[in-house]
Figure 1 (cartoon, each protein chain N blue to C red):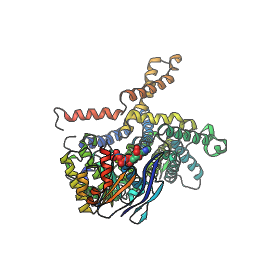
Figure 2: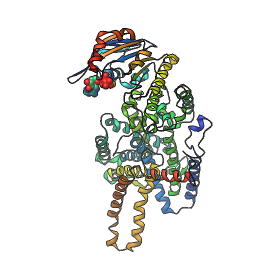
Figure 3: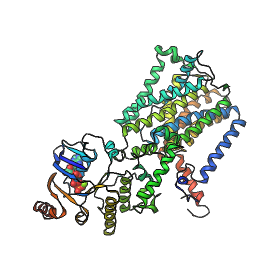
Figure 4: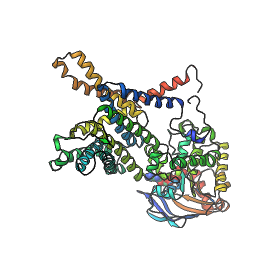
Amino acid sequence: MLKIEDLHLSFGGIKALQGISFEAQAGEITGVIGPNGAGKTSLFNAISGFYQPDRGRVWFDGRDITGMAPDRRAALGIARTFQNIALFRGMTVLDNIKLGGHTRLKTGLWGALRYFGPAQREELEFRRDIEERVIDFLEIDHIRKVPITALPYGLQKRVELGRALAMRPQVLLLDEPVAGMNREETADMARFILDVQERFGTTILLVEHDMHMVMDICAHIVVLNFGQQIAEGSPQEVSQNPAVIEAYLGAAA
Amino acid sequence: MINGNLKASYADDERVLDNSYKKAFVYGMMVVLAGFAAFANDYLILVACQMGIMLIAVVGLNVVIGYTGLMSLGHAAFIAVGAYGVTILHNLGAGTVPDAVMPFIAVPVAVAISALIGIVVGLPSLRVKGLYLAVATLAANFIVIFVIEQDLFAPWTGGMTGIETPAPNLAGWVLDDKREMFVLIAVFAFATILTVQNLFRTRVGRAFIAIRDRDYSAEILGISLLRFKLTSFAISAAFCGLAGALLAYFYASILPEQFELALSLQLVAALIVGGMGRTMGPVFGVIVIVMVPEVIKVVFGAVSGGDPSVAQLRAPLQEMAFGFLIIFFLMFEPLGIVHITDRILRALNRWPFARG
Ligand SMILES: Nc1ncnc2c1ncn2[C@@H]1O[C@H](COP(=O)(O)OP(=O)(O)OP(=O)(O)O)[C@@H](O)[C@H]1O
Ligand SMILES: [Mg+2]
């Protein structure tokens, strides 16, 4: 579904990615782990089109998207959440989620200026759809009209997932979805991520430091360290890999 | 939360006039304006026409500055394009196109030309923001006026000395009276506000706001910055073009200097005073910006008692009042008059006790 091929990316002297290659299988959750500064977020930025890699390719559904602009990649079906939450803070939950529908909706300028007719029909249909498929699903119906700034951190993370789901993505990139959450919030989020995979068959790429969660829900794991891919395999294989143990112990020491 | 704001369906929840206050206000305004058109004296009609024309332009400017977050100090250029466009088209069509049909061709064409020029002027917004964009749009304003003033184009534009403008004949209804023009302007002003309001009920308007608030998030949601920034400029230029067309019909003649930087600044000032990115912002802002000089004029007339040495202080005083007004709002109420009315409405709504 999503194939990364020999990806290299550097910022001046810093080599953020050095030859990353793996494939995220359709409908599976693939974990990307590694110590701080390993290059996980940089990898996501290269996949979503914010950074142009120096070398290597990104393939989506058999198509080379390496040179494509971020908005075109989103239109193809790649959605993402950010490590530091990138919601529109002044807007309500509902307005944020509606923005996720941008590429699925068809209303053009003329329809929008007129509103009544096709645009209104599409809007109401869309509203019904996100109410059921996103707002009810994520159990956020009580905060629909609440501005983002008034929400606790954990709920903001959930709303950001909701906005990504409103895109009906084929591939979903989640950058540390449970960072800073307590146990209960983490368990909720893990359940939602599994539900997304089961119900919508979405291919998920998950960056996370919470090892329990990663080992629990990922089918496949890629391990990065200092921009290099040091291991890849099932949770079992990866957790027994000496290089991985070394990287984590090294980082902890 | 506003009282009685519980909705039974999503359609109800998506309405523009989503509570009884807003409904009462809009329908009340229509009645007041109809009464105004019938009974107000000529002076008030004149002032109201100026407000209406400026309102259309500021609502347009609000799309680009208030909702898309792109600065412009050049929107007077689009008013010029609308005004000169209509005038030139009338002159070109005289004799071949029947008078009663002319406005139905001239206005849409002039508006379309404004929109196209708006796209060109908006191109720098893809690369630069803030101050740099302000300067780029300012340059566009200078260029448009410069072109209009050229002797080369004087046969069409009248050059530096200006040009006489036509009176519109709408399918037989000749609007040669200011009171009739007021009706036309009021209808267009209402339609402009509603049309722009519609934008923000759909993906197009939401895309503008997303670009304003966080452009990289907008991109990640599939919003093309190129397409929607230019669309925003085109819409806002189109409404300024419409304002220009009405202005040409309203006055007996137009001069290039009417459309210089001072007018662009006035539009921005109205937006600052009224409140950016809000429906009612342009309405409040335009009322204040047009009223202040008028009030000073009236007060001065009374105080000076015809003494010319006092009367000559009027113009500089008007400019100073204008400056103080902007500084006052920037310092004490940067969100504009809408922020004050928001607070009043909220207080009223809670009175006599907080039920919301
Ligand atoms: N825009 C940038 N400019 C310069 N250097 C950058 C930039 N983005 C990332 N880097 C550098 O690239 C390296 C990888 O950073 P990245 O954010 O991808 O790590 P990460 O694995 O996501 O870490 P964390 O777990 O802390 O989020 C780091 O050394 C970082 O300083
Ligand atoms: Mg990171």
